[in-house]
Amino acid sequence: KSVYWKNGRDLLTQDKIDIEARATIVALLQIDAMQGGTVPTQQSSEPINIYAGTNENAELSNFANRPFKANYSTLIGDENYEFSGDFKSVEQAFQYAKSMFLSNFKDTDSNNNILEKIKNTTSPSKAKSLGRTLTTLNSKKWDNESQYIMKDLINQSFEQNPKALEKLLATGNATLTHTQDKTKYRELFPKILMEVREELGGFEQEQMMIEEEMRARESQPTQQTSEVESLEMEGAAQ
Image 1 (cartoon, rainbow, N blue to C red):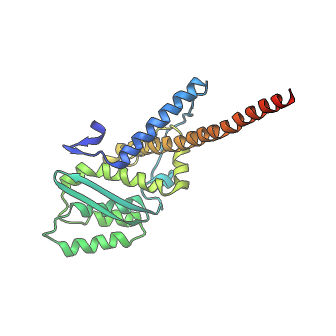
Image 2: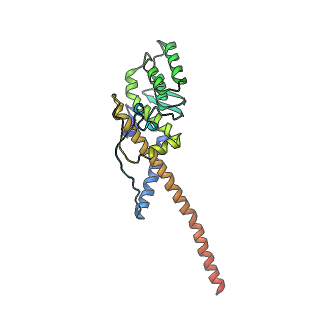
């Protein structure tokens, strides 16, 4: 329940129901695989640091050029907060997400101008700088929600960019780090990225296992038909 319930609101959506359903399928197939003597394994490796500023595995950072269509919605109390759009990077979308928590009664023109610049820039560092100049931001709500927004955006960006997802999954079960960051995201960003890797990696594994299961089932009728034909031929020969 804690996974889908936060600050007194229900977070259980159809997407999360689908994830749970897929996870159940994977678990059942894994049990079947273990009964057959095959246990999926994953290699461990040294920690992998991700930091765009020093070009360390920058393709996995929020500054990476990973175009995607963002679609975010959440309910806080009785209010619905949402935004959508096309973005070049997670950082650009993340900064634009602050639009959900701006007051509509002050500095509206100024904020709209800044948001337009964020939406039009191709530079993630520029988007970050612009995001810091937004006024009337409800900092409390933003601080409470920002990590969940970031995870959702990271998830969407990798789902829509298969080659980038391959690079993320290629890190195996290595511990990811973000050591140069001096904010709370020093710990949160790699934690979020590892969670996304596990969730999307499980989905990829599920797809392969389901495909293998389907191929195995498709071959069964052929085998049964061959057995029947053999019996018929034996009967005819007698």
